[in-house]
Every structure is written in C-alpha cells, then in structure tokens.
Length: 119
Image 1 (tube, rainbow, N blue to C red):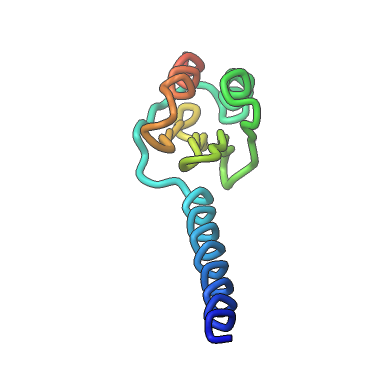
Image 2: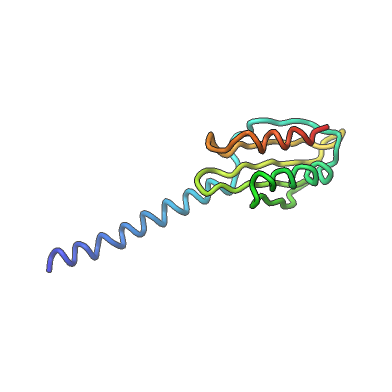
C-alpha cells in the first residue's frame, strides 16, 4: 500500500514540473532577446515587411507578421528553440529593421532574406 501512495504522489509532482518547464519555454519565445543586427532602410515599414515576409515563409512556412507600435514584427517560430524575430519600425528616413536570432540552431537564411530587402 505504501508503494501505491508514493507512486500516486510522485506523478502529480512530475506533471507539475513538466507543465512548469513548458510554460517557461513558451514565455522565452514570446519576447526577443538581444538584437543580433540592426539596419536602416529607405523603405517604409510596410514596404520592407512586404518584401521580407514571403522570403521568410519560403524558408519557414509558419512565419507570421503582426502590427506593433510604429511598424511590424515578423516571427519565424521554432519548435525546439527561441523564435527568430524581425522588428521593423518607423525611422527618420524610412525604417529600422532589428533582427533577433532565435538560437544557434536556426540558419542564416532568415537574416540573409531580411538583408536582401534592405535596398
């Protein structure tokens, strides 16, 4: 009887730990960390995001775009690491594109696609 009760007590504790780890990992994906690159372009945020999004979707089909204050945020989700994020906001002569690399696991294809749209 003692073993059964001990096993029952351990299972909920294990589930709580798993759920806590999952929530913590999802919270890490919600906000970008330190930027890895920031560039200026003469394009408006709308023009630049319209150039980048299809290129990102060719590399990461689940890439999305949403409106943020003064621009757009493009996100390429990752199942195993932090998301790659590109923030595009108004600047004096166009817009500023700030790239946040998700992890060492993500390739440079997304950054290269963003770079191609600068001109």
